[in-house]
Length: 283
Image 1 (cartoon, rainbow, N blue to C red):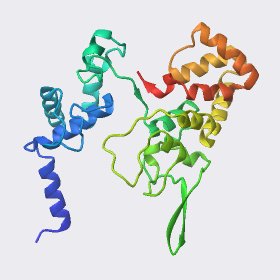
Image 2: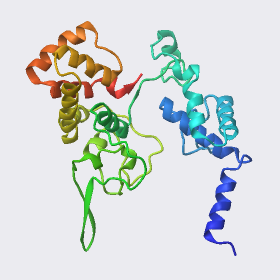
Image 3: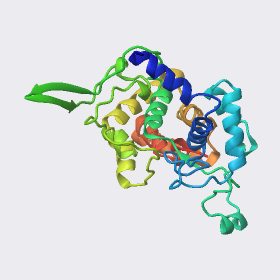
Image 4: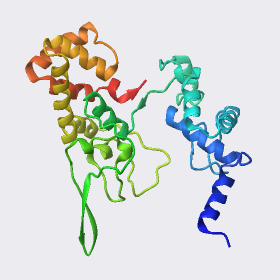
């Protein structure tokens, strides 16, 4: 009789076989969904009779074949999609196209997408100069456990460089949530979420102003600016814009930011940048 390892290996080889077109189409659709906010099939977990129909079936088949030709390299598929004219087109609105296809299912523009919760946290760490870029190894835990007849998990807000790794290294437990990630629509770890909800609520803005993690990173970012640009409020603001947005501030933006920094400090200005659409959205 075959061992468990042999049976699992046989199943994996059957699923990922080039003769099984469904697997490649599902994976290609999920990668497309990641970059455009919605897949060519809008039900990523259901390609059956009850699922959605592909808006561009020939494109979905071509992407699936490209994934197989690329020896199942997701990096190759990401690169192919992101180098396409469809992905690189402008997000500008067209009244004529909007009247025909308000949901942009025909891909006539690049729909602005908000960063996912984990990406917001990682971006805040990166621009603040506090990101721990260690690769591999055990994840970090933002909870502690204790036993009282059964296992319990207590949420904590840990400080320290070892807790500032990318969110992909966060140790998940089914009942362990994070206030900042939760308010930014991170799915409940106890449920499956093939499509994430994207909401806009006052709690999100409040969290990006007052959450303990955000406050610490705002202070760290202010310290980074003072270290890199010791003199000149305007020069510090220009450096902040370059780090957060990848561009210098416009004259009007600089004129508004200087008195804010002079009255309330760099850390308050940084919280404003964290809350801006340009920081939170890919457009």
